[in-house]
Length: 224
Image (cartoon, rainbow, N blue to C red):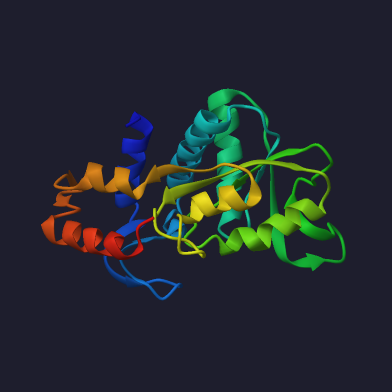
């Protein structure tokens, strides 16, 4: 596993963004882990987060894109932090754009924040985590309504590796199949589990035998 992925896994734990326990998800599923990108709140955390996303995007998509699009609301700071990090790491200017929940009819009018989109723009979408793919159903039409843009792919922080809306494949694989662009993650839950099982981070064992058993049970039901 790449070193930046190992760093990111520990970073999620240090930032309290990835927790293990007993959680009820929006989907109604009871999960032994929960991911919350809203836990990244400081300047140093956002700077590091942007670098990890930039690493992932560069590894998977190279430099062949123009815009990072982060859906409101959590995608807004993600797109900004990653655009800054991408320039710092790879020397390329990337524009950021996000959507408003409601279109603005005065001043900087329209549905978008940040950069406008035009025909021919190559766009990478960026989100925190995708469980069902529902957010993409809302975001995709917004992007395509702006012009003849080319969606290069989607990058998320964590691939939960559980079945999506169809109940057949993972949410990320369903997105790829439906929309025709690749969907990638900085890390997968398989990588997270393999790295953290029995390992001490911040002075504690994050995934012990009990949590590992709960994860195995969860994925026997919902794993893709």
